[in-house]
Length: 176
Image 1 (cartoon, rainbow, N blue to C red):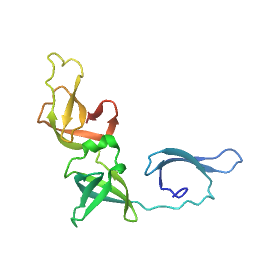
Image 2: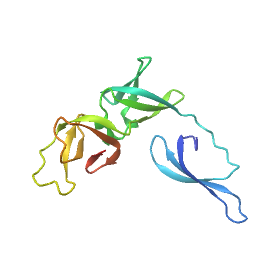
Image 3: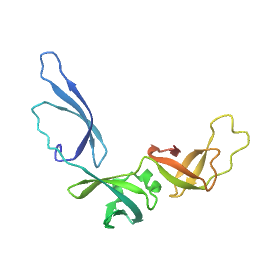
Image 4: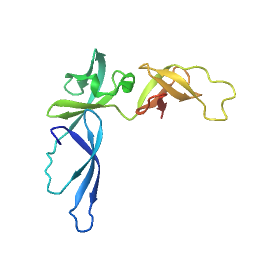
């Protein structure tokens, strides 16, 4: 907790300069906005620790501007705001997929998609003849409606693994 907001530390370096005091140079990522800042802390600074709970749940469906997820054991449904997932990843949310919720005191602060998802290619053009010498890709549509670049050998009906976290805003997502 820094400036009454939740931040995640993802890089830190201890700096000692000659006779000067030691300090920590820390990169902080805002949990909700995703912005990154660098901050300097001295050993005397007190920062409140926040405990994050990770809970694996199952994504069911989208209801307006909310995602409906369910706990595996209790079958309890939770509504999560779509703002917690980047817009370009919404099309990769397939019903019955496992997702991870990050919670602080029973409040959902982030929804994480898995590294890879296995989905069916619902539309892909045929590969052009002679395009086997280089790594040619084509644009295909997967179950959630996302457009992805796939190798030429992928056809309609093929089940493939994609990485929704490796976003390329211009071309969609790349196959893994």
